[in-house]
Image 1 (spheres, rainbow, N blue to C red):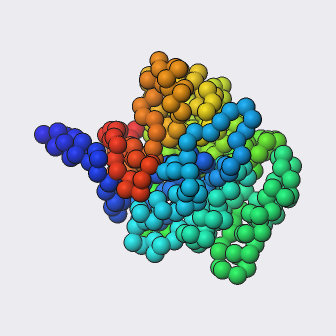
Image 2: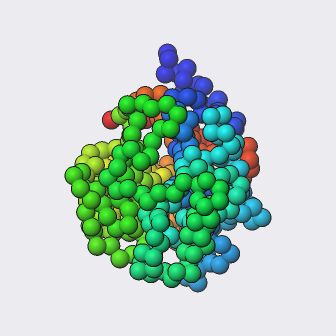
Image 3: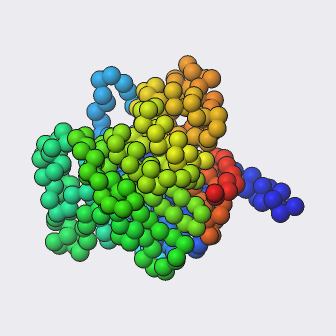
Length: 364
């Protein structure tokens, strides 16, 4: 009877705004601007955390096009992120973000950071390099590509009290609850700058690509676990972090827009989450990769912020394996972490109405 009542209540949310976070819940929001990645966390005590704020800009790659921007073509991605976060911010946050994490130095993850800060400031910022950003050059960029970001960090640290830190691989205390500690909650830093935590020490995986420098971390709340590794695409690093975690988890953001079947398989064979959320924004058959969808879509629930309609129409058998396509996606974990739901939200307006509810999922 209780489960039927709960199902009725959840079904009744469709078409209505998503209820606000409540103390004790863990929220993980994949915010969709269709022009970059941004994940917003509300931790069980109201601590707020953001990973990335991307902006691909006006230039489209020559080989493929972009999906339509959300909610429209006139709103810059940083404003999409800021408006969304303000709507859901808990009262304890005082109209600011407790911590921002930049996973790596690519435009679809970093180019909206400075604008976001001007709209919704954050108190701490973590990246793989602080205070020395010269290492970014050796992974394919130039000093000019990153100077806007490093200059921003230096200026805000010096004049506005922003606290900047290097992401500490292996730490399970650098990130976490700032208002009310809870033994059931922990965030462990597993990778950054090409180094990976193997469970005992930080290992140099000799990565040479910017994507492989991504910061990666595991969020644990009771039996619930969520994994995110930016755009990591380095086999040795993927193997190291996956083996270090070593067991099935509940949910993850798929690495590098789900673009490499071999790499996804390495991670997925060990972690094998019930729910996978992927943020992508180009009209490409390999982001997300069709072979990955075919391989795991029948056994795991796949949620995609964007897949262009032309692809869905051309390959209906493949994309029918997706659980849901299009929108903001919210993983909401119940107090204590024993179960969670996924909410698909309308990304075309600021009402953030619920399009569908999935779950409940039980934590392992």
